[in-house]
Image (cartoon, rainbow, N blue to C red; front, side, top):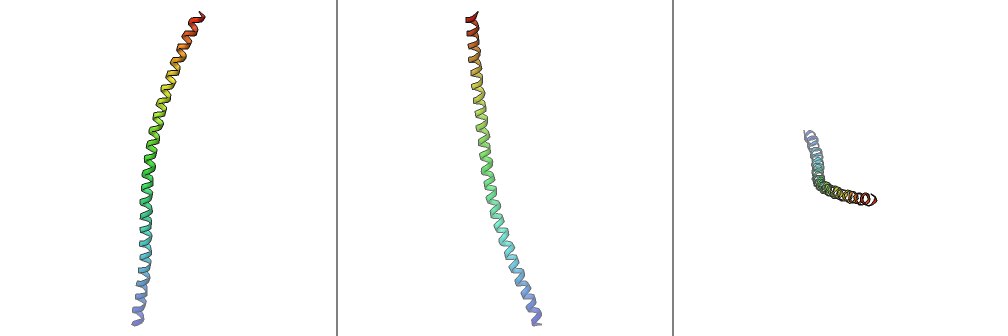
Length: 84
């Protein structure tokens, strides 16, 4: 009878050790997951900021292009008027 109790006790000890290991790994993975979520949020925010900056630069570039086109058109008018 003592031998049977000892086997059961050993099994419970082994099970308890394995459970502690699993719980430790779960905790570690939860911490890593939280860190990844934080990093993802930071990257998403940086992406939004970059997209906004790109849109602003594109608008500015288009405005500069329009101004250059107007200047070139004025120069054409002046050139055409002088040569006529």
